[in-house]
Image (cartoon, rainbow, N blue to C red; front, side, top):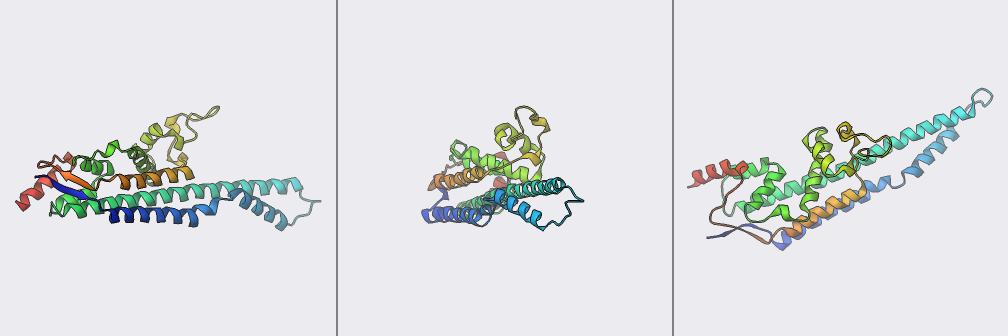
Amino acid sequence: MPIVAFHMGNPVRQNLIAAHRFYVEQARKRLLSQFENLDDEVNETAEMLLNEIEYDPQIVDPYDVYEAVREKSIELCQMLSDLQDRTRLSVIAGMYHEWDKKLREWMTREMRHWHNADLLKRAVWDADMPDLLELLTSFDWDVAALECHDRLDVMRLVVNVFKHGKGTSLERLKLQRPEFFPSIGAIQGGLPSHLIDHTQMMVKDRHVEEFSEAIVAFWEAVPESIIAKDEVEVPRRFEKAFNKDRSATS
């Protein structure tokens, strides 16, 4: 007889969405907003440096002073821009990891109603996200068909590149979304893809919004009830744990 494998009640759904939106709103207000007037800040710093520098124009060429201040301003602008990029990436990583944990918590909590054993739950916590979504798909909810699925996967790749640097995620991201690497294909002097590494990945505020909307769309799309058939064929990644649990409880 089919049973409800996973249930998403409306209060749970709304709490998950509200917590996510709070995180993003506060990140914009308290972190990302600090970078809204970078040009003004750099210009003010340059003006302050010019006012503070004392020199004898009979000995030092004023042009040399202005040039030194200009170079300092460029250096400051680049450092602040790099900090802005890392802050955006940190916000994206934070929202992704929180979604990841909340999904695993929900799944293992719901599994207690029909699978009161530990190995499969442990496998859920150990699995990569693609394997985890494949497990949900084995219960006849086609996660890959969701409109938000590709955006969630791209977010996973961005977070992996931010965390690990070079690797499979970097190469996949360059193929799927080269927009994160502005140097790829740039006219006159652009670099070929194989010379682009993780240090050249760039995210914008629109990507924060894109990924945030994808998480909300996912929680909204979770069916109220995901039904398990009499015989569930779990992905191979989970099969061993599933069978051991069944043997131990039979």
